[in-house]
Length: 468
Image (cartoon, rainbow, N blue to C red):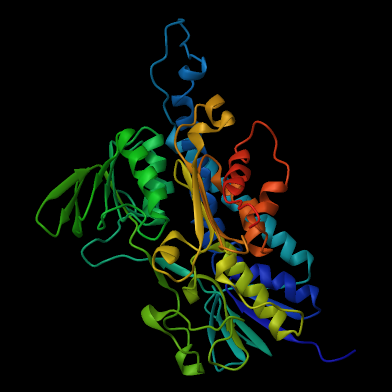
């Protein structure tokens, strides 16, 4: 037997537990130090809970088109039922139960692979040692040949907008609401703000979205953001543009959001979606030689190395892209690199991501913005879903498929899908981008008739050039 590597991972989210499985597979001795339960914020407070809530809201959204498709609801007396009502307390119970069961599944899987889990808060004591503050007040010291930091991030709050967990809420606290808000004010129109605003709107809540920019989702494809905003306003949401929040206060059952220009908005609840702060303070990082960049995020290279020898970092604490899939990939790359397995550096141009609004917005590869700004030369085509036969059958009127390919070679370098389940429909584009397929190759694969994916192939066909 040769030397056994001892790996210590601080944080049990996707950036921690996924690489733990890789390290165990490669024969290392692995310890995961975790505070709140395996799965991290992705499983316990963020992705899994929010997407579960959104699944219910989508179902309610679908029921709106039911009459158009010939389905009518009646009450017990046989009269036409005019409203669909959500039982929010029940939805939130299901959300929490699902999150906990997912966390337990991960814990079982990790233990089955021989990974040891230590519950407590880990901090660095030099590059090769982690000290764990245990829940009972004691400490445990773990020596390691490699440390992976996956400490995540927490919702950003402001002194003038302090959450109380009852009516002024971060996105981690919304699952404690029992009654349906009479008016929800969402502050922040990035991905998280847009997702919750869209979900509560579908659940029948009066929603006001306070957006500091000209258009919701400033970081996404502008065409997509425009379609989404159009749908949200058509369904009755109030979108306040170029409006900056000054403070949020509560008086009994009323929450008041004051804007920097003096206007006020009143509602029953306020959700703060102001971005994230990395969990990197007070855990010995800088003292151990780990450099932190802007906003306290850990500085990493493309194989997840920090500036301290043998210390790697993955996930939201690095601020590279706040996605569970990227956290897991960063962590896996770190393990492969340290343990000498075949490794490909992180390529952000292959990342596919989705905004779970209604409609969904999925993207992969190079963006419209990069094309417009001349970072890459690409031809593009946009095809609206309204003309797709399957979309017509399902009563879908909003959304599109957009493809970017290189002139000359025709290689697909990016794409955007807006529509129901865009998160599933992006996968063929993701494969095309990661494997450098041409638009012709994408068009040449069979699609089912009728299907939404037919629009992906049709868009690819429109990028075809006759041989010169």
